[in-house]
Length: 212
Ligand code: BEZ
Image 1 (tube, protein in one colour):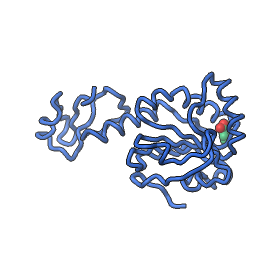
Image 2 (cartoon, rainbow, N blue to C red):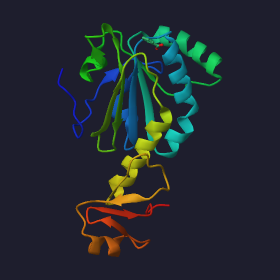
Image 3 (cartoon, rainbow, N blue to C red):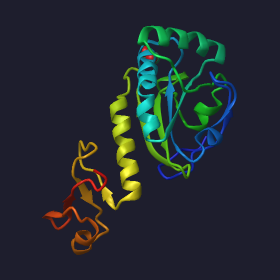
């Protein structure tokens, strides 16, 4: 098991899932991807997370992001659990959940935290760009459910900064002002960002969101 770092190629895999056998790269095609792990089936926090994820699918679709979850139980168990999730979260789980009984994928992505539990995965999140590089890694403990608004916010930032020479400041959300990339001089920035550049400090230049 190698450590995965930002910028590494996301390891490809083929695995069983709640939607049959699935290959990561084929599934992602040339879009973005989000892979998130759950400690185990029939666990309370995961039930809320998967229902929330399903209710957010339209937002991920809008951003061309394919969703894939993982839990270390089998596909038959996933199918039963999905019925509960759909019932209690009033939704339809509409993306695959990897059935990682042999922990092949969990180990490949270093999702097991032996200091906590050898048998369960932590709540990992990997965001994968169209070139299959890993753009974000988050690791939450099993006891803390993830914030899907934050995941969408990070995707918005990653997609904006992939195509424009900007970075996003603390608590940024779509439409807010952005930071001009430090690699651009203020003079050049004024030519590129026609909505205006405010030089707060020589190293801190703000400009309106170029896509807003
Ligand atoms: C849960 O998903 O609810 C959970 C899983 C493992 C430990 C604590 C909570």
